[in-house]
Length: 615
Image (tube, rainbow, N blue to C red; front, side, top):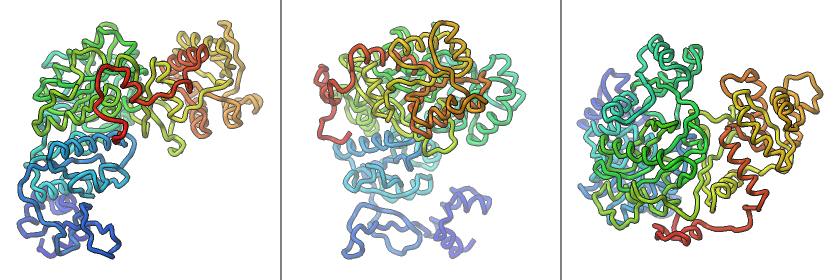
């Protein structure tokens, strides 16, 4: 390939990886060759002055279709390159941008030069005054190396922007980049499902039975030995992409295993026992050299099986026992030490009976970091940033691993927000693969107050009178209790055939409504009731044993399409009914409007931020 051909290919937008694939060599070989031949990207400033005056901005981009750099390359310095989260999508939203902003602000406050690299102009991290140098570039190994070499920074932060930069840690390390914080080799040990599961066995941290997926026959053999259901989990993915629960051999076949293998072609796929009826507990924290310096334990309202990004989080935990919390702390400390973590981390656990089982540990900031930081009154990302550059954190008022719960005078709840009206045809059902596109966080004196505030804040309108209730037989023993309570609270229940029969048998009044395909009067059809605005809330509890799969889907989808509040999880329904009971006894919404800083005033701890700072 001649110099002219190589330059033309770069001008046309071909990446080193694409060229390597065409030429049968690695992207590193292509990079080395073009650098040797002097074929390098040119850095230009984005013109913010419409060409009326010379633009002197820190808005930068690189191109091969230019001949002169607008700024000079920097000599080696103490600057830090921070990688952003990229485009907003399911699994990566403003939560990670909050982390990136907190990181670059802390760096500048400490006197370090902050270089930001991101390609999403709707983020705060790409505001002109947030960093010293801003590059609008795609987050790829090639582009990061270009900026890293040109800016002369001391290192790169990969752990505040979500999964995209985290996935690049090992390739960047192999290319000679100094990755700040946790070693990329340890990040790989956590992201690689096989290595992580193997490590848990070595250090004595309990986990669900597991096996690396090597063939269809081996997967079926494991599933039959461990017992269905089983969970198939790819490596290096965000938001549970292609993660699926299989309930039988048919489920485990081409769909589940095929999806997982497709998204994780270069890394192992692990199959593990899916523990039903378990509570899920999270440990968010910051560590330095394998020792935890800040920690917050939170619980999910929903049982395990709902992706953590779609789950409703309660901080501090109010329903799980202190035994579970202590076991999570002990296991978390072991994991952090084994992975020698320096920086942010998020560990997830299952709790059932006397067992606490590790699910995974992300060696990066999680989407719950902003919520956790605000709730406990200490900025976890600022602390992690100080760890990256070797600064002291002893005066940051960080909550220790074994300290008393924080806060003590209020409860924080993080609730997901969904965009199903924009996702035509998608089933609005919670599962192991993430579907939410945002979240809200609310605070209250009790979990019930905080929960109702969170629901209302996420565009959930509290029902006035009519509730459509439908549940599969497996939920009947628990559903009877909240069905009775809803009637006691003055709500009219409209129920489908089997649900109506069960409630009638046990003395709970309800009105029979027809399934969408029924021959009964169209006026009593569940879909028409929803479309005509005669239903205030839809509660639809289905599972793998449901026979009316299409009918239940149509009910859920119609509720989403007509913006009727929808609950599809039994634990959420239980908390909702309890909260409505408290609300009916004594209204807990609209009586006392308090900001987060009002709640801080009730605590003895001094918060890390003020009402006039960005949150």
